[in-house]
Length: 235
Image (cartoon, rainbow, N blue to C red; front, side):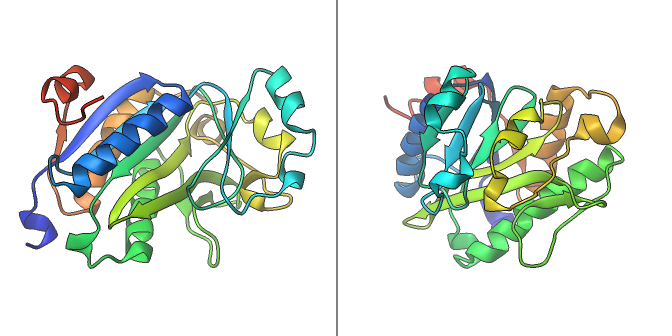
């Protein structure tokens, strides 16, 4: 079937979720999607203050040492997604699509480009001009500040991890590391660009709608309890 003939994407807004808990949920959904027990799912959430490190991360990306960051109240997790060190915190919207790439020709690069397009379109709706930068993954403002990060993992044709968009979050923790392994990388947020905070729930709704549009699918809201009640994701 072509993407347009596929079942809807379930969009589930989860609020603030600890990183380890969100990772466990992704892994359960990954197995369910591989077994075709569920359609594609887009988890939208926030994390408590957390640094995550991809497999290619190096010690110098956390120059103060792991214990210093933990003393600041920021957890540090190693993870299997692509990319290097990044920061997650309240006010940042994180999207974890658990998507089968089969209808999209198993094209990982096309999948990443579509996610970048989602972020760019939603930022544009808030009056924030954004773009990609050749040779780099993610989304950047017109003055080349990074505002959206992407890092994924693919197992048996199904994706986990995804994207993070700086909406209202504190940018200071990015300055304590080498974000995304890029020296002198400057970060921005929607609030910084607009000089005012925006409604994060409204932003998440727009992401859900744009995700469905970018992937030629209908996006359907699903409450977390409803996801559990369908017993699609056994504990």
